[in-house]
Length: 485
Image (cartoon, rainbow, N blue to C red):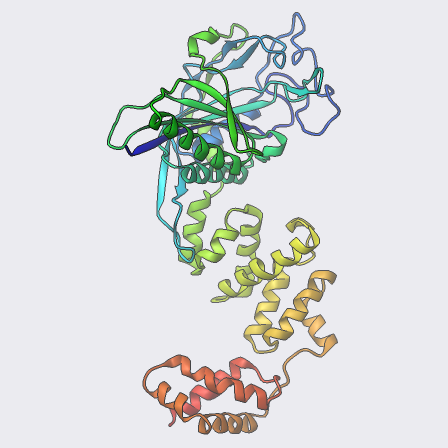
């Protein structure tokens, strides 16, 4: 029997705020254990929560970027359970009135051609709600220690509909969602720091069936690659169980990305196990149109919208947009460079950024912000090449030195004598005539309509010029002479 997988993801995203969600205690990562705490975080008697508006602003922004409906009223609920990482023995969350409803995450379907944008699909969302994070348990050989630095950090839970059917779709969903959150400045989404965490709900059903199968929740998916690998493993496991005549049970399983195996943790809890009830210490929140309009004005262009615009406005191929767009700083760097470089030079500028700038940054393990090369440097280099002042090989040398020193390219080219030598027009014409006369085959192909045949003449001309002639001038001279024949 053939089976279809049905996958939904629950993604927790830490909101990037200076303080925690219900207190003025600082939020952050990498501090000494239990130093980012106060009486509210530790749930000392008599303490009361106070709402952090910045956390609400960020969640509304996330909802707007994902085309959610922003609820006019949302409220806070207590999710009751006992676990050492939650000092209150309950978590303040949102149950029946979350802040964001509906929406979708746009993904690019796997298997697209690498030179063009592929087919896209929108994965519908159920909701986004805001809650407080819990502490972190650090397990040793004989004991476990609790660090409450993370407790109380604002945390969004983004819940998808069960609308994905392959592990690769889930990977694309998580990648797209992460990029959008980083674009919006909502979160850094560093999975190693726990800023983005994902649980996957997976079931299988016979192909053609509409009823959902038995759901298994997969936890401990602590990298985007592990999400993909864990889901693929779970699909195979469920198919194998049914093929062997077994029965699937609703449960939570732990996935080990190192071994590629999973094990059962517990049977799945239902909502009533948490005894949700409205939090008596927090008032409901009303979100009016003016509030939404203010946040909407702060929203950046969505990544896939930017990719489509780069293709339309700059004629950039997928090979460039797929590198530039996922990094907002890099795409902003490109746009500034393209505007400075001039009309028709965007793709050339993009190639220098993607191929040369990123190569040098990677080799030195530097961030873009640390680079001495700015958009004005690359734009000036592109203009020198376009004018025929610098040949490509010389431009490569200039770029490497420019990256190290931060000098402008014309200064480096002058100092090192790398600029192309002006060629005598009569001498250049003679070299071109000699090249044409020596290659009757290429001349015939050109007359037959094969425009690329002109390249056969350029090599001999550049050789005669000892590599110092302007390629642009060589091309113009050849075309002028050939047109007159």
